[in-house]
Image 1 (tube, rainbow, N blue to C red):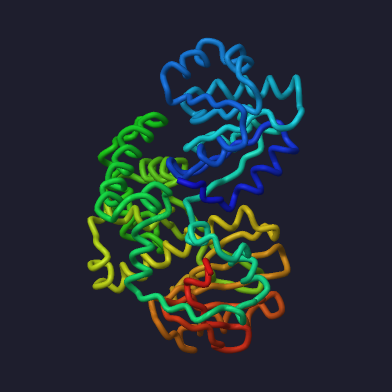
Image 2: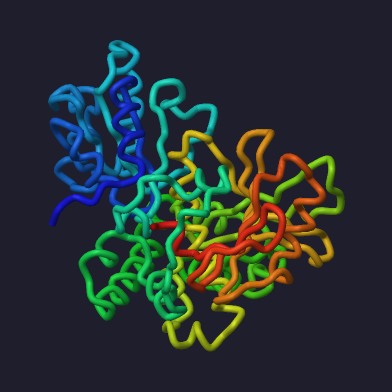
Length: 407
C-alpha cells in the first residue's frame, strides 16, 4: 500500500537535517516507525529480543555497528540506549545520525534525562482526516488564525458520517485497511495490550484498577470533572488516581487540556479538561456502537468533541504559529468554551463544538461574551457543527462545519 504522507513529515526531515538525534514519540501504532523508516539507512527494533540483547550487553558497541542514519525503534524497551546516543552525540554532533521512536513519554522532562540538549523531541499524533484525504495542505488551525472561511465549499456530511469517522479512529491500520468489524476487534486488542503489557512494563499498578480508571475517564472524555468524581467512581485513593492518570498520559491515551487564564477575566476554573486521544477508544471501553452514541445526547457531544480534539492536537506541533490549546470554564459552570487556541500573546481564537446541523446565535453566546471580554486579541470564534454550511453568527463569529478541518 502506498505511503500516506503525515503532517509531521516535513518537520521530521528538517530537524534531522540540522540535528544529530530526533526522538519521535506518540501512541503505539500511530505510524511512527513507518514514517521514520523512510529517512534512515538502517533500523534496529528493541522490542525484538535478539536486537534488544546486544544493546542490553553493550549499548555503545551495538550502536556503532549500524550504518547511519539509524532508526532505534521502541527505545523504551532498553532505556540505556539513550545514554549511548548521548555519548555518541557528545563525540560527534553532526546532523542526521539517529531517529528514536517510542510509545512512552515518561522521564522525558526529568532533569536527569540523558537526552537533554542532545535529542530533540517531536510528537506524532494519530492520523487525521486531513492526512487521509490528502487535500488542501493548509492547516485548519492556521485558517482559524486568519479567520479564513469564505472559500469553503458546501460540506454535506450526515451525523452518521461524522460518528463513523469518529469511531473508526485515527490509527492507520484500522483506519485505512480494516472493515468495521475487524477494526472493532483491533481496538479491543489495542486496549488489552496497552493495559496488560505496555502499562506493566513501566509500572506495577493493578491492571484491573487501571482499566476501571480509564473506563471512568472515558465516560467523562472532553469534560471538566473534579478528580474526586473519578476517585469515587473507581473506589481508589487520590495517590493511586494521580499515578493512574500520569501513566495514561505517559502512554498517550489521555491528554489534559489546561484551563485558559487571563488577568482580564476572573473567577475562571483552573481544572483541566481530560480528553481521550482517540474517540475510537470509547468503543472497547464503554461497549458502544454508533447507534448507541446517536441515541445518547451527552455521549454524542463528548464523542464529537473528542474527535475534533484529535484533529486539532495533530496540527499544534507542526503549525509555524506554534499555537497552544486550552479550554475555558467559569467556576459556576455558566460559561464554557470547548477550545481556546492561543497564538502567542496577541491572538486568541475560540471554538465551540456542537452536534447540531444548524447552530444559531444562542449556540455562539459564550463566544460573543469572550470576544467582548478580551477585545482586540480575539481573532475569531467558530461554532463547529455537523451541518453543511458556513455562515456568520455575529461579529468575528462563524458557524463552520467540522469537515472544514480536512477539505
